[in-house]
Amino acid sequence: MALTKHTLILIFLFIHIIFAASKNAHSTPLSAPDAPPTKPDKDKDSPDGKRAPSQPQDGPEGGVANKVAKKMKAVEKKINEFNESLKKRIGSPGSSHGTQECVSECDEVFGAALDDIKNTLESLESQNLMKANFDVSAVATNVDTCSDCFKEMVGGDEEVEKLGEWVRKTTGDALDALQKATD
Image (cartoon, rainbow, N blue to C red; front, side, top):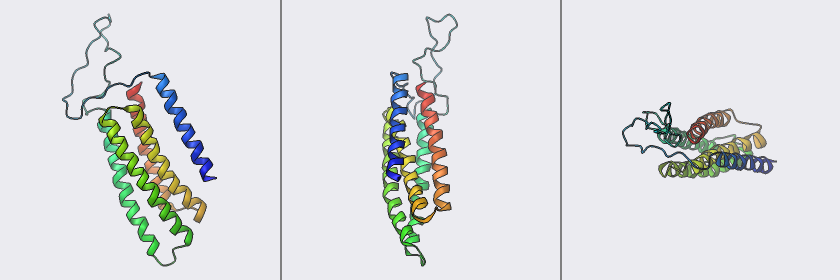
């Protein structure tokens, strides 16, 4: 059942990415992280003087790449801290076999999530927003896999669920920012 659920999630993500890619044939370039903010160019052909559609829509805060990178670094820190505390459960007395299996599973998928965060940061640096979108989605999917294991093997875990909710919200905010940048 978990495999089917994850397959459906991946299919949904691919459809979302393909739809976004077809909607936006190109991604909007991001400002460089260290570049000073610049005023948008006016569209010379436009009588109302609005900004040309190809111009970045980032504000003086440093752009969407910096915002998403900060969110991903926060997720990375939280996953690392949580994974260390989760590993301590294996040695605790009364730890069930299901808990031990899930801790092992979570360690593996958290490693994959950390790789996805690294890929996200690289995608942001190269200004590949579509790939960053995919990588951010993969982070949430990996954390959900950990939560699913605990739900199926031991009936759930409040701490794991809280982490999952926080990661889904944080990655959802990052995905929204990426989507707005490509609109």
